[in-house]
Length: 249
Length: 311
Image 1 (cartoon, rainbow over the protein chains, first blue to last red):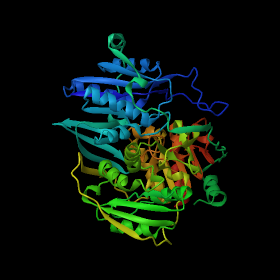
Image 2: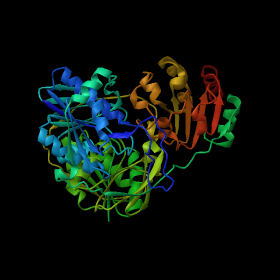
Image 3: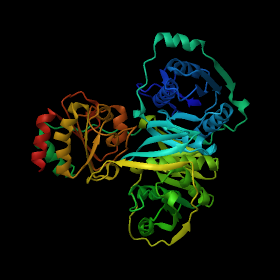
Image 4: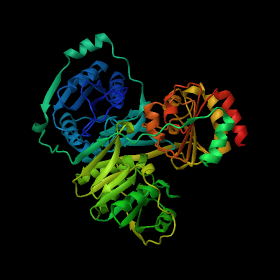
């Protein structure tokens, strides 16, 4: 059974992003880039399924500029077997990425396609669901536990108010949440090994899918700043303020 | 130009998030219909028909729709979506699960977590965990939108009298099935709908301290319970307590942060609260940068004192 995992190169989660002075977007020049944290969990889960003998091959794919090769190498170091970069300098929105992934998932006959539940840059939370929809596959989103048995994925999902358990037949799309697993540390020997693994580069145009952006970003701004309030000396002062000034209790 | 809003419900009652989504819908179009897709959800359809501003309620009834599984729900929405210029749902776990499926089949983009309607095709939405606000324009014929509920004041739940159009949806055996649910049982208000929230963070030191300090304070105020991601990761409380970029986005009247340092990802989930109170022993904690009232104190002393003063 083959597993396809999609990963995205994003601004590292520790970086405090800055809006460009012309409000055209986020300044990502000379900013540390990393794999989207949710995608790291997706790779880890796929590699664990291979180590458990459930999967035979883990293929990692990314769509974006040539620098995404670094992200793919990280995935290979975690334990993916081979990588595919769908190269494009253009802005790729979730629908476009879903279309790209569909062609690859079909070509590879992947039984499970793992994705992070959302990317921490555009916070869209769409690509996995869109992919499942385009391929007419069932989906298990926001997964915190995945058990594969006899062509079925039993997925525990993080939902509002608790957990939900569903069973979906394979092939299926699964998007992962934070608590599914804790990704391993990438070791130096594995980084070295990853350099020898296959990384295929395909031009996005050559896939023959419509990747034109559908949403136009007019501007990007800093959120309105919340003014810092006052420090109160003790609990009595706090209660007094809440009762008489803020009038919330 | 009409808008379709997908109701959030559990077959028994209509969830308040629907009212915020309808508010967003009414800013897109004066003609807002509500889809109640469920099983035996007559009471929900009734409730939806009472909502101020709703033109029509479409009540789709089928066993497969009972558990809001994405596949049959998306099919149901798609069966009527072509008659609308806007399809909206609250950005809840359900809304986020199903709407991209709808958008992809319509071959249109989705606008996630919209916080403001600027014009008929232009919207504001937060990106980078709320550290930037993007104004985006959609050129697609149908705008598929998930609504960040905190961005829109709810419409009035009563005062309307929309007709209910019942549709019997086909029961098709799908590739997904519902197995079970483990919901945190609580008599407290729901986190995303609460007027007051008391949240605990890593500064508490343990799950026991959370029970000992945060829970009684919430009891005293009739508040919902929240937590920072650090507290969830440390195992103090379940994940559905989490407030932040990766948890729930809240905007109560009063948010009390107990032992929460105020990581960016947490602030992203609560900075729109009307009044923020922070109690922390570290005077340098970033939470004080957004708090209306800050108290530097030992939680073990200040919180019981606060409970006593309020009780």
